[in-house]
Length: 81
Image (cartoon, rainbow, N blue to C red; front, top):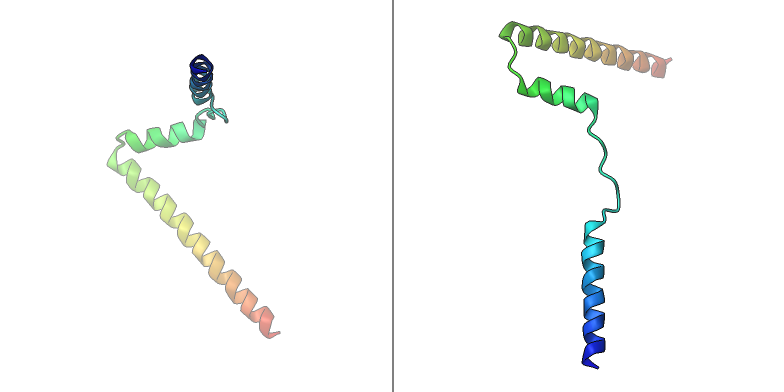
């Protein structure tokens, strides 16, 4: 009886070790865009380049904001018609 119980425990241990090594889903490869983005965050760049980039982002945000306001005002006008 003891040998049968030891055999079951041995098989259970082998099964547990085998299952713990298997991953259910493959690890995705690192995205090239993420690599470039992370590199841009870690590398030091000249202050003028950073200011120029910030100005570009600010201009894009402001133009998007103006577009949203225009669209909202058009929707208000259409609602009253």
